[in-house]
Structures are given as C-alpha cells and as structure tokens.
Length: 300
Ligand SMILES: [Zn+2]
Image (cartoon, rainbow, N blue to C red; front, side):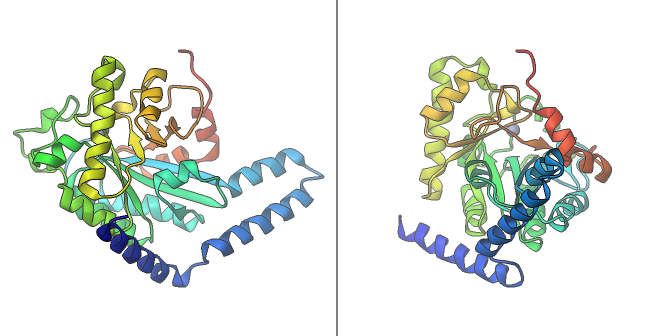
C-alpha cells in the first residue's frame, strides 16, 4: 500500500470511529442481529413461513442506483436534493446501515445494509449528494467513465447528449480525478463505469476487454487503490460480458435492471431511482415484495 493510500485509510478509519460514537459498533450490530435471529427461530416453530420472512428482513441488502442530483435539471436521471435526502433518511430510520457497493454484495449480510451508488460521476454528486450522505452517516459508491475524468470534457453519450449546448449543459460536467480522490478520502468507493460508456453486449471481444480492463487500470493508477467494482452502462450485460468482467479482475458489478438469472456479485440487481419517483414510489421500489418480484427470471 502506498503512503498516500495508507494515509487515506487512516483518515477514513478515524472518521468512521468518530461517526460511530453515537451508533452501535459493527460487532454490537452483529450480536444484536444474531440475538434477534435466535428469538425468531424459537418463535418460528409455530409459524415457519412467517419466521423465514422475518429472518430475510433482518439480514437485508438494498443497493440503490442514482445518477445526478439537481433541483433544476428536468432530466429523469436527476433527482432533487430534497428527494435524495428524504429517501435515504427513510431507510436510515428503518435501521439500514451504510456500506460500499463492493461490501454490500460480497460480504454476507448481517443486519440491514444499504449501498447508495451513483453512475456516470456527475459534478453534482460531489456538490449535492456528498453533503447529504455525510449528514446521514452513509458512504457512497460512484462509478466513473474514465476517459471523461482524464480530460474533464462534458459527459456525452447516447441518452444524455441532447442536453449539450442547452441551458443545462453545465449539469454534464464530470468529476476530475482529484475530485474523485476527495470522495475516496471521505470514505466513498470509486468503481469503473468503463472507458466511454458503450453498450457492452454490442462490442467485439477486443473492444469489450479494452473497455473493462483499461478503465479499471485507469482508476487504480489515478487513485492508487484497488478498483474492484463495475457498473454496466445502461445495465447492458450478458454472460459473455460477465465472464470478461470477472477475467478483468472485478469482483462486484451492478446491473440496471437485472436481466440474467441471479443475483450474483457480478450481476447485482440495483434499484434505479429517478426524478419521477415520489416518496411513495420509492417506498414501493424498496419494499421486499417489489424487490422479490424483480428477481423472477425473465425469458431470454
Ligand atoms: Zn451510465
């Protein structure tokens, strides 16, 4: 580990200890969760189905997928700061504890875990989302399209390019590597969202490998820390892409929505949250019944 990475790890560790003063420590949470499981297993002898459902809710993982945060940009991928705050506060009040995307999908759940992810690395994530997550004691995970962090031009690909040269063009400003390093210092995970944001299933093998491997290497070179997580652009993924992602060294990857059987750590079904999602719709999207419905395999 480099001196810079070690220094960052120590700063994050100290901050986490300070933030944890008013909250139970991880070991206590595990113990509390285990006690609750034992109580339920005892009660479950009379109603096993109810017991299983409650056990599943005790050890639950929610992974949310946002993009930009803006009060004025009328794009569906931009949620307002107020909505973001209210949505996350709702889950914190329900007992969910923040974690990074990688830990959420690779470490077996003990208690209620919440990973808040942001795709594309819009500037508004640093300016608007970071203070909100920080106030709620939540780390974030951001997936960066590395070619844009390299040269700091406006984000541009099919789906958002029509906002260029208009009154909201400034919303397409992406985060630079130094800004992303600031988020890493604050405890965020920085993952890859490929080099150029293509539909990965449409690429030939060479181009696919290049998008996955070079973007991971760019993250690791710029931030001097491991890049273990990936978000598939447009949630576009098939078995060939998953195999290449694994071979490229990723150990966690998010889809949007899930289109393969699973979930697995490399095809994790994140819940996409958009501007149109009122607090009522958000409650529905994060409800266990709705999430279970999304996991029913679809025909290929
Ligand atoms: Zn994207």
